[in-house]
Length: 135
Image (tube, rainbow, N blue to C red; front, side):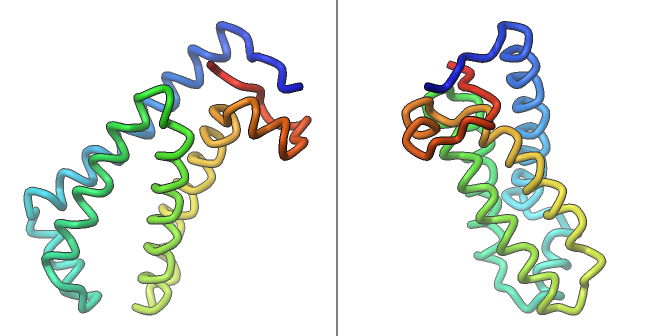
C-alpha cells in the first residue's frame, strides 16, 4: 500500500510543480505569441510555423493542467513525451549539445510524476520505492 507523504513534503512538491509549470507556461506562450526567436528556431529545424503554434498551445495547456490535482500526473506524462520529441528534433538537426534542457526537464517531470502518481497505480505496479502519493 502506498504511504501518504507528509504535509511539508506535499507543500514542497506543489511549489516544485508550480515552478516547473511556470517554465512550461512561459516557454509555451513564447511560441503561441510567435516570438521571433521561436519562429527562427522552428524555421531552422525545417518545421512549419503552424507546428510551433501547436506545440505552444500544447505546452501552455499542459502547464496549466499541472496545477490541477486530479490530472497533474497525466500532464507530466504529456510534457515528458513532448520533451522526448524535442530531443529527437535536436539530434536530427545536429544539435546534440541542445538536448541538455529537455533532458533536465524530463528528470524534473519524473520527480513530479512519481510524487503525484495515484496510489492505486503505485500499488498495482508494486512501486514500494516511489515518493508516496500527495493527494
